[in-house]
Image 1 (cartoon, rainbow, N blue to C red):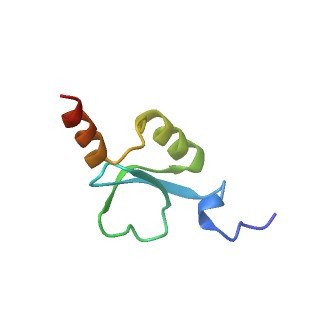
Image 2: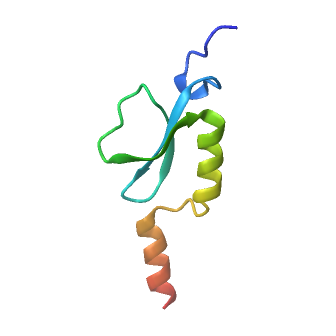
Length: 75
C-alpha cells in the first residue's frame, strides 16, 4: 500500500495537535514545520490519538474572540 499524497491523510503518520491564539486546534503532521502563530498542545502521537484529543478538548469550534463577544453580549 502506498502512502497517501496528502500527509494529513496518512493513517500511519505521526501527528501533533496545534492551537492558535483563538484556541482553534489543528491536526498537524510532525515533520511539517509548525506555522507562525500556532503552538503544540499535544503529541507527537498517532493520527487517531491526536484526533481523539481534539474531539475531547475542542467542544466549542467558535474562535475565542467570538465566544467572548457572545458572552459579553449576553450580559
